[in-house]
Figure (cartoon, helix red, strand yellow):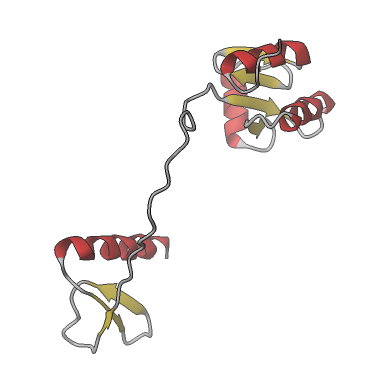
Length: 150
């Protein structure tokens, strides 16, 4: 099903470039098909394409500047993990969290990191085993996730 959607999208996008029309028809089993040429054996109807004519909006400067990612490896039963997660959420810091027991990526990364406890928090190349709010605040400030404290 998903593959058909991709082909339809490709056909819809390729149609305007080639100047060809898009046709819709139903086969003997009742399945609907789209193509750039009507089939010989079936009646097909032309599909009217409407193009999005929305103007562009300027992007604020610095909106897509890259910051080191924040990643946390945790476990559902871990109270310190919950504290670290609440700390990040309260400061609106975007982060990826991987449970080391319920996700394959979490398990594999945890082994690769040679983890011996949770949480493991990564801010770019910095690694924290456990959770220390003051140290993490400093790392997040340096990485541009938090405004620097005076």
